[in-house]
Amino acid sequence: MKKSTILKTFGLLSLLFVFAACNKYEEGSNFSLRTAKGRLANTWTLVSVTDDGVAEPLVGVTTMEIKKDGTFTMTITVGSLSDSETGTWEFNSDKTKVKMSHDGHTDEYDIVQLKNKDLKLKDDHGGHDEITTWSGL
Image 1: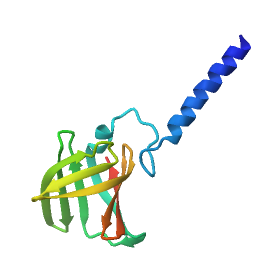
Image 2 (image 1 turned 90 degrees about the vertical axis):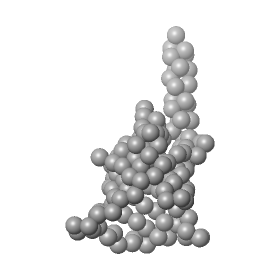
Image 3 (image 1 turned 60 degrees about the horizontal axis):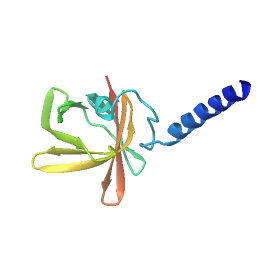
């Protein structure tokens, strides 16, 4: 009886280790009860932009509302001026990238981190990486 309990415990720990090691995104999340779509659908506020690791200054406030229906609205507000654009989004087949289409063109971003309230996207700009970090509500 004791040997059986030890084997079951070892088996369970082995499964947990395997699932924890299988990380789809560079910076997590290893495990979530919410789907990738459920985590991405949120209202996000831009908190930082780095270009090859160098912080870029933020101008105004940028928010992005991503909806489960595959649409998004991005709004940039500087002082009393505000500008918005709308578009559509979709994951690639393994949900490691998100494609965002607006104004006749599509941008594809690598998902570095996708948590309920944390989102990091990486964009390759001709050999250098731009990473945008967003905070969700």
